[in-house]
Length: 88
Image (cartoon, rainbow, N blue to C red; front, side, top):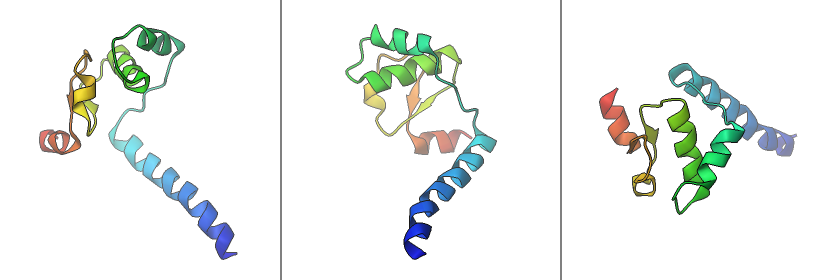
């Protein structure tokens, strides 16, 4: 029983975290066009380009990340979590 409990606990915790985050933030969906646009962007990391493309499409105010230097080419400003917390 303990083994099963340990296996399922992370899923329950993730669900709770997601519920809390969705009270504060709008969760953006990913569109095929975001993937296509990201492929043509000049980012070193494709996943960062996908985030930038999606953020741009939904007109996000910020991309919150610990690694802001990877988003220099982004049309949406990237800020660190601590900076975001200071702004709200």
